[in-house]
Amino acid sequence: MKTKIDQLSEAGLFVGHRKSATHPKMKPYISGEKNTIHLIDLEKTAEKLEEMLEKIKKIREEGKNLLLVGTKKQAKDLVKETADECKIPYVNERWLGGTITNFPIIKKRVEYYKDLEKKKAAGELEKYTKKERLEIDREIERLRLKFEGIKNMETTPDAIFVLDIQKDITAVKEAKIKNILIFAIIDTDDNPDLVDCFVPANNDAIVSIKYILDKIKEVLIKTPVAVKSVKTENKEIS
Image (cartoon, rainbow, N blue to C red; front, side):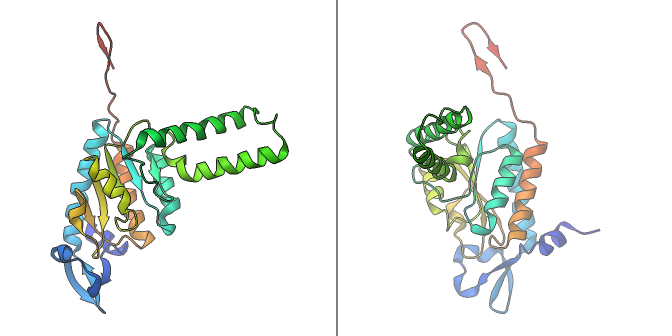
């Protein structure tokens, strides 16, 4: 029977970056090197992964919102698939500045996008000329790429999970400004101090990313979502 360490190894979570690129703060999570590539200590990876999954489970139990962020080309489809199955918002295209720090403005654009979708579905765009409908279709597609993953996000998230903090550093910075909990996969060339909770692992290989997202998905799907109370003048209902 395969141990957890064997599973982590098979998924390639231990493969870091070249020694020359290693961030000093990641040295405690390195077990050795091979052909100038630093190798991640899988015992510590397993420990940090369990810690992170417990915190994500608690967020789910409390009915809080987690936003999944991963704009790497090789992971875009996987990010969308994971988020859709878990019924959580996601960003898998370019991060739009202000998504967190200027959410009211972003929300207005999302509502505009949803309104166009609704009108198209209801056939309300048929009154326009073919050329005008083509332009509206192009506008809907542009908005879809920007907002599809967050179109049902009613408020700023309580936490975000970032696949690559270097590629999506703006998301990390905005979350910090708003004191939003930050989870991440931290590779050997990343600074772990930029996030609140992390798993030291390869964040380039799709098999490694998939392993971690699958673990998160398992926790989110299995954990019952808390029903938030709604207060009325005379009583509180659930």
